[in-house]
Length: 108
Image (cartoon, helix red, strand yellow):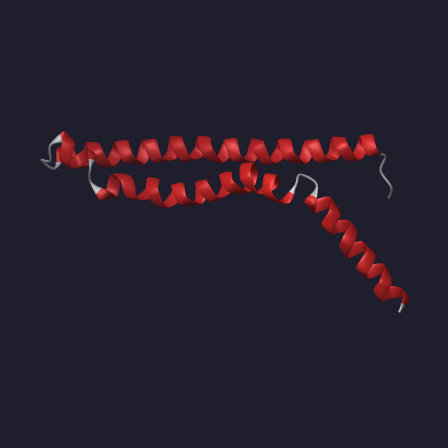
């Protein structure tokens, strides 16, 4: 299946936009879910007699933010930084390389 340069550029752009969209969805879910969980924990801790500061700075309120934030940072790195390092069309070049290797192996 041969694509013209214009089709290939469109498919590459579409792939990059999908990766961006997925990252922004991940970010939104991270903010909403962690906000709800943190609010619930702070309210619960305050009902158990803690002051707002004690409840707010409790590890239970921030542990999930930190751990999930590490995963989100890795996702951001793969979307925003990695393409700059490898180039935006590295996937296409790797596919070509593997296809050429496969053709060589089939002819031998």
